[in-house]
Image (cartoon, rainbow, N blue to C red; front, side, top):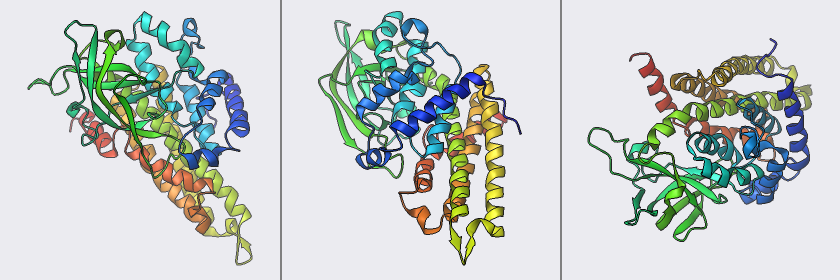
Length: 385
């Protein structure tokens, strides 16, 4: 079926991104995966390419686009090549919306030019050891100084994508204790300078997948954060987080679809080249049927994410819509990629083959951004259950 979600400008951008990936990423990607992070100068190249400024208004050095479809194109092209851009998706898809929506004019003037160029990389710190998806249970605190000039930040965060290389981190913290009536009250966002005294990057975590993306533990010991670096209103951050979750979950859903589509492509190419018992693996009925099932699943996933993309651009994507898209695509992608790996036989288990990276990378999509169990709860609630 003809796909209508992307127009000529998106496809021109796709060609640029594809050429960039082939020239700048594919030849060195095994090195990035082995070292566990993307070199810092690569982020500056993404800045030069214009990736970080797509949704930034022109007055702050960006292109001023309002569509999320350009981010979707990047997801498709990275998956197609079996690579990633490290923590850059957090920089643009997670951190940027908060700065644009809740930053003051002074903050935007101060941060966005460096954000667009890649000179200043950002991350967001929500999860804490022992709390998982329960953001209302966070224990990191920020107390306002007696003279009212700064906050004193104490606590710890974990699973922070891009945390080891970030220059500024949007730290979710308690500026007031929860009330008995509302556990979510009293949470604020501070945009913390990573060079501050008392700010420390702990372990860089060794993950099952996403090997080229640094994921770190962070700790804060009496870190002084100027009041000018409070993002939005004090105590209102839980509402901010909830507002951005549909876009975050759409991004995860689209990435899962793109990984599944890439897996089918890799498997189709492999079975045409590989011979068993003197015949192409592609010639066996089992191979044809498995890939036919996978393609049908990918077609269904594409329909879901394309519809969600259109809804998001129209500002009509609800929390339940995004949860449904994430649940369906991430669970389905797991089955598709597993079948495609199986068609590779033993070689599918070797990390030199991109199918093995997809298998490991896609597993976390059912966990981060809200687990599949949380997505089911959101959907059920929207059904009146």
